Amino acid sequence: MAGKEIYNKMKDKVKDAFSSSGPETGKGKTKLSGRRVKHGYHLVKGKSNHPMEDYLVAEYRQVGEHDLGLFAIYDGHLGHTVPDYLREHLFDNILKEPEFLSDTKNAMRKAYLLTDEKILERAAELGRGGSTAVTAILISCDDSVKLVVANVGDSRAVISKNGKAEQLSVDHEPNMEKKIIEEKGGFVSNLPGDVPRVDGQLAVARAFGDRSLKKHLSSEPHVVEEVINERSDFLILASDGLWKVMTNQEAVDEIKDFKDAQAAAKHLTEQALNRRSKDDISCVVVKFHC
Image 1 (cartoon, rainbow, N blue to C red):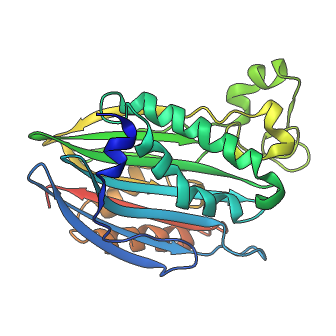
Image 2 (image 1 turned 90 degrees about the horizontal axis):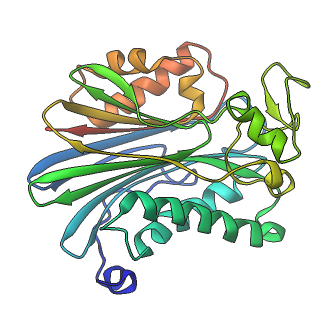
């Protein structure tokens, strides 16, 4: 079926959809291939003087005969317009790709790059800022559920499997891609500040937007795919405000006994604050087999 036809057959079944202008906490549930799935989210503003720059999405839709769970964290920098644009458009662009169901990983790669092109084209309107992103799509497939995760930047996806944390995303740090950045004519420097930055400005090597740095940045996502099975406990998506003060395994251990996904997400943000995280913190927890 063509991508446009699939998209036209889409029937929104939205349980929760969140932005920084909406409620700071919430939850929802559905069934995918007979498996009960519950999610919860929580967000707190950091101690900076600028407005909240984190946005997230947590909703359910249907494409053809397939039920979907759509979850994302968008962590903006130098303004909130780019993450807000991503909240409105990135998933729609992914679902419009003709091979979304047949080759979801490639569809996500194409949609990420296309969305970044559109953001750059509208730089006069959206401003000079940018955003990291981590997106997760659950797809019902006959008697199984497929999980596809993509990310640019340092917002992170971590899955718990029998209590063991496994990072599904990649933290795109400038030092990791220093050679590539330099080959594009850029540089990586710890000055000003105390962390590596692209051209001394941005602390991630991949992001949406950032028109002034785009020649030296990438918006190519890291994408992974796997099947949710009996070993899969829950998924955590969170901005770096959480991961700066907590390891993957610590995050999993903190909520492994929580049955309520919303309470789990709230607990993680509270623990990050207790550990003196000063950044905006947004968190989504998706529980399987609940």
